[in-house]
Length: 123
Image (cartoon, rainbow, N blue to C red; front, side):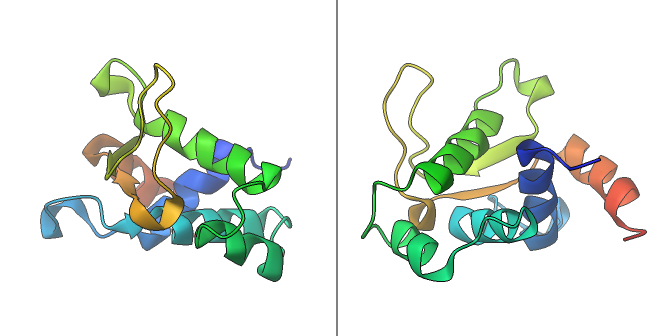
């Protein structure tokens, strides 16, 4: 069974994130999280996606869809159901667009970090 886009994003955030007790804010750069999720999905194109993450190519539908999925995970309500916490300009559910992936950060919430450790530790 192929992992979903959200599962790959969460796994990348887990692998890039710092344990919650050692940080004040989420520390995984969203660009790095997305790059690894796209790579694992077999969708990474170095030249095409690198430009997207540095703001040179705003018209990249694949990377944009994955970034929107990551942002949606940071905006789940209520907070107790949220999988990712974010830092930086993440936009709003009302349509305000987020800043680019290199200017935002994300990390698993405390509850999800403990769950991810159980799920991904054997890998």
